[in-house]
Amino acid sequence: MAIRNIFKLGQDGEDVLGKKCRPVGEINDRMKQLLEDLTDTLYESGGVGLAAPQVGVLRRMAVIDVGDGLIELIDPEIIDVNGSQTGTEGCLSYPDHWGIVTRPNKVVVRAKDRNGNVREVCGEGLLARALCHEIEHLDGHMFIEKVEKWIEVDDKE
Image (cartoon, rainbow, N blue to C red; front, side, top):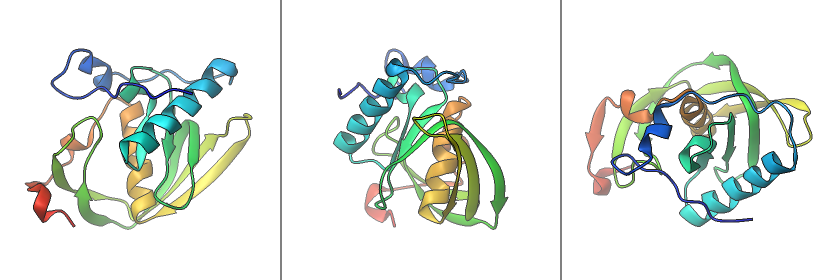
């Protein structure tokens, strides 16, 4: 288990943030170690989600914890969306910047767990926002592409 460096916009190596990730495929010990490292790095950072490309690994893997326990996602795909929500969003790869973003209010994601079992995660509100945000990282996109209005840190909801 290790705390990894989080790549940030404007720093060397940031180009990894704009690249589409490869599927994980076989979940071997190396991929399980990456899940552990992502988890440790997420908790150390104080964020709610972290995707593999944010630590320089171009694999379709992310971890999320909005306060209800850790969710590990391997090769995730959004299979259903419903409604909309507009709210404040930030990113560990663009620290101290906050914007207003509209996202689905409810999403269903199909992904594998660390044992290779396919499962579905249904998220509403903040969890739906985090699922969309992290899966976009896996496709080489960041929330800054969706920001409707930038806000001051003191104004964040």
